[in-house]
Amino acid sequence: MELIKKLIRAAIESFPIDLDQKERLLKRLLEKTGKRGENKS
Amino acid sequence: MNCTNCGKKITKGDAYCPHCGKAVGAAKTAVQSGTGSSMAGLVELARTGDQNAVSALYEQTYSQTYYTVKSMIKDEDAVFDILQDSYIKAFSHLDQFSGDQFTAWIRRIASNTAKDWLRKQRPMLFSELEMSDDSDIPAEERFEDDRTENLPDQVIDQAETKRLIREIIEELPEDQRAAIGMFYYEEMSVRDIAKAMGATENAVKSRLMYGRKKIEKKVLELESKGTKLHGLAPIPFLRVLFKNLLTRCSEMPDPGILAGALEALTGAAGAGAAAAVGSAVGTAAGAAAAGGFSAVKITIIAVVAALAVGGGAFGINKLREAAAERRASASVPEYSAVSVVESSELPEYSEAFEISEVFEESEIPEESEESEESVLIEESEVLEESEQSEESTLPVDGDRIVLSGTINTYSYEEVLELQGQPDPNGVNNSKGWIYRIIILDTPQPLQGRQDINTVERMVSMIIVYEKAPSGLEFIFTPNIPTELDGQHIVFSIGDVSWSSGTDIPMGAARIKDIRILE
Image 1 (cartoon, each protein chain N blue to C red):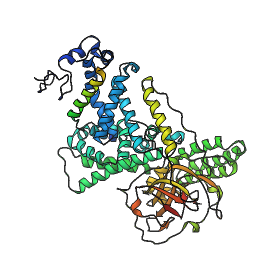
Image 2 (tube, each protein chain N blue to C red):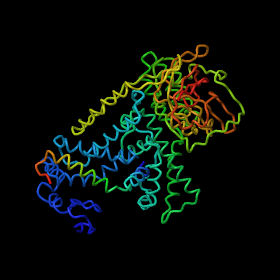
Image 3 (cartoon, chains in turn red, brown):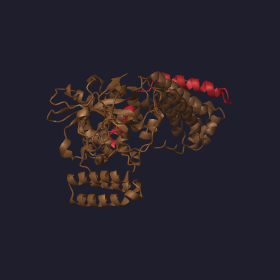
Image 4 (cartoon, rainbow over the protein chains, first blue to last red):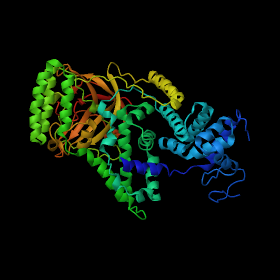
């Protein structure tokens, strides 16, 4: 159990993160949350 | 400008370094100052609309949240949509979050959103049925290697190993991939995965087994092509790993298991049968004390005899745990007929030897208590689940019973694993046999044909073919192409006959007339 779990965990956590996508998502998030906040940038 | 943490080049105005993910500039100040020094502090700031805090929380949780979703879903667009929904959902309901486990909270939301997505991809066909108490221990955990001390971390950490497994995971069909990810990465129970995917627990176990076998097959393929990886050799390691996984289930049956079954029977058979059961137990216990397979066999017979006397309901619910798809790795039997015996010609055994006489339909398990933070998401899940249940339907084929399930070929050891019981005939009698079986999505009450045995049983499996090492074959259902192995099928059935109580898979139905509909 532990063996295969570690293998799969390591494999999944080696998936490359698309930084453009990550950045895009943050912008959308800030757009959404910024509407109700008082500290808009 | 450069990141103050890792020194790599970043764009001016970035709140976080795209390379190391750590806060820079104002965000770093927010994280390091006052209440911003912890997740809880950042959440407090985020609640006021502080965008640096929102960014900080996002940056600090993104990787883990991404992997949570990615472990379950292959499609990158879907992953992006789910992440977006999850983060917006989370930050729109920050008032519902308490405590300091923000990462766990957002991961939970993302996981639930991913499950919603998965359910929409494959609507639930049947309502979920409760498993026996033993099912709390997933079959996967019962058979897998737990020798963590033998784990060569260097091998797992090796980039080539990660790449290899990652690519194999990427090649898995969506449903198997989701099951693998939820089980091994999210560490969800089979029951929870089944609920999340709108599938039966059998189906989930099937997907787990299939996924594992697929990984094994790919490893072997790579090896046969002469793939050599640098440094430590992950392929031999993986071969040993998966070989261990597959052979664990063929260990000698433990008479203690049967003693437990007898105890359970004593409680279920009722007062009228208690004396007979006691007698049977005594006989069996004496035989078991002598050791060996004969003791096991005698114990089984004692159980059955007691059943016949008491007439009590004794469901071998382990049968419901049956599930495995092994299309890719299975050795499809060659139908070189040596001897064909149709179902109607098979000898029928005495009722006293029928083990799976009556199954009690279990109640749907109660929801486990969920944390306050997850209430919002769970409610939507429950709603969708019920909606889908109403929508789902099977095609009609006249007045024939229509069922669905997955057909595949299994080794003797795998059948023992599936049925969760030792072979009543003893391992030496049937070792080396292979079996072609349809695992039903949902156990189904079926009645035997009028001229043979009209008893009704709850059926988890339909056996269509079996073959002995000698080449002796039994084709119970002659018209199912071998190409269907590993496929989910919808089919209608004709007359049903029963295997004897000592035939494995125990309790399986034999149906000569099966019409594939989908």
